[in-house]
Image (cartoon, rainbow, N blue to C red):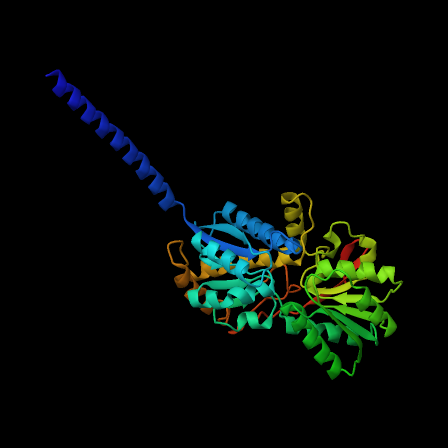
Length: 394
C-alpha cells in the first residue's frame, strides 16, 4: 500500500512540475506574441579602416529606432536594429554578413554602407525580394540589379558631375588634377563622370593619378600633380587615403586646394591625423552638422548625448533619415511584424516610388526627397569646407 501511495505521490509531483513549466512556457510565448517587432538589418564596416562609416550608420539607426519606440512605436509595432560587420568587403565577407542578418530574422535591409559590399549582395537581395534602402552605397549599379533597392544618398555619377560643375561655376581653379582608386567601384565611378563633365565644360585635367587598395605611399602621385602645376586636386576617395595624401602634400611642400566627395567625411576623425592639414579642404555632402535648422541641431544634440559627444557625420544623418523613411512607409502601408520579408518588400518597393510619397529629413537641404522607379533619390549634394577643425557650409 505504501508503494502505491509513493507511486501516486510521484505521479502527482511530475504532473505539478509539468503544469508549472507549461504555464511558464505559456506566459513566455504570450509575451513574445505581444511584443511586436519589425527587424531592420544593417551591414557595414564596423571594424577596419572605414569603420567610421559603419559605426555612424549603426549608431544613428539605433538612435532613430529608440526615438520611435519610446514614442509608442508605429501603431504599437516596435523597430529592432541588428547589425553585421562586412568590413567593407567586396566578396565573401559581405555575403556572410547579409546571410547572418537573414538568419537573425531581418525583414528590411538598411544597407549596405559601402558600394563594393553592396555590389556583392544586391543580386541576392533582389532574389530574396527584401526591401533594401542603402544610406550610403552610392554606386549607380547598386540600384540596377532589381526593383527592390533604393538609395538615400546621391549617386556616384551625380557626385562626379556636380563636383565638376561646382568647381567650374565658382571658378575655384583652372588647372585640376585627380587622384583616384582604380580598384574601387565608388572611386572610379565618380572619377569617370567628373572627367566627362570637365570635358563638357572645356576643363583640362593636368594630371590623372591612380592607385590601388592598400597603397600607403602617395609621394609619386603628389609629385606628378605638383609637376603639372595643379591648382586643385580632386579626391574621389575615402578619408583614410585622403589623410595620407594630405600628409604627402605637406612633405612635398605642395599646397593646392583639395576637393572631394562624401567619402572624405570622416577625415577629421582619423587617428593620429593633424586636423590642420585638412584646413580648406572642400567636399560635397548632404549634411553639415553646423547647420542651424531645428531638425539638424536636435539630431546633433541627441547624437552627441548618446555617443560620447561625437559629432555625427553625413553617414549618420542618412541612416537616421533611412529609419524614419522606413517608419513612415510602414505606417502608411499598414506593415505588421508577422509579415515575411518578401511580403514587406513587395509593399515597400511600390510605395516608396509612388506618386505622392515624399520625405523631408536631415539631408536634402530641406527639400522633400522622392524616389524614381529605378531607386534613385531626388537629392543634390551641397558643398562644405573644413575650417578650424569643423565642417562649414559653403
